[in-house]
Image (cartoon, rainbow, N blue to C red; front, top):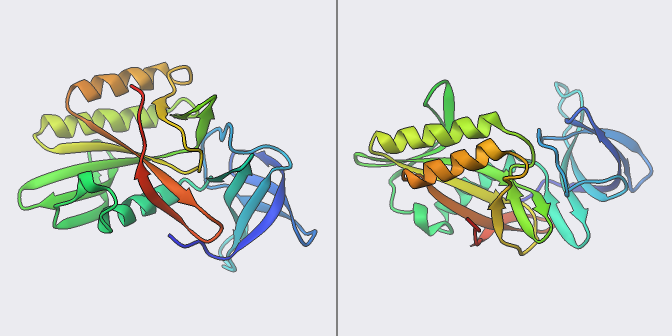
Length: 230
């Protein structure tokens, strides 16, 4: 996925989850929309390098959107909405080999209890339900999910399990949106209930895939599978 033109700046502060004050390289101080409801632990801090996109839409209150941050030598895509686009792109171009062989790919399909599955793959009478989560948390020398307690994430795991019970294939796809080359695990110390539910649904047939992204100031794309520590 190619980025729109990026503007570099320095973070002043993030607040109210969805707002960030930033000083651009030209000295202009802006408030940008932060498309990330998580804690963003380990991927943002005052005075870190950030990159934003500009959107000249009269309907938008905030014209800038936070897209990337840099922690140490690692670029991080903090826009969680990018993950679904990456997943679709990587299935369509054959990068995610485990999700090939389907004739139809439909995003955002209704299923479960008032939910939408990120990707529904179909082939004749076979269905594969794919839920996608964006990963940006680093804990020591591991990447992890979630970065905050997530009852919604737990609900998604249970709904995937229900699809398995109905005879379908169900896949939890974690997409790492930072360039640290590290293994992945579930952050039990952050959300024990999510971690237990994760173990339960795996034992009942829900599949798990973890893929790493490569990130530059021009594009982000899924490039390889990542090891998961169970």
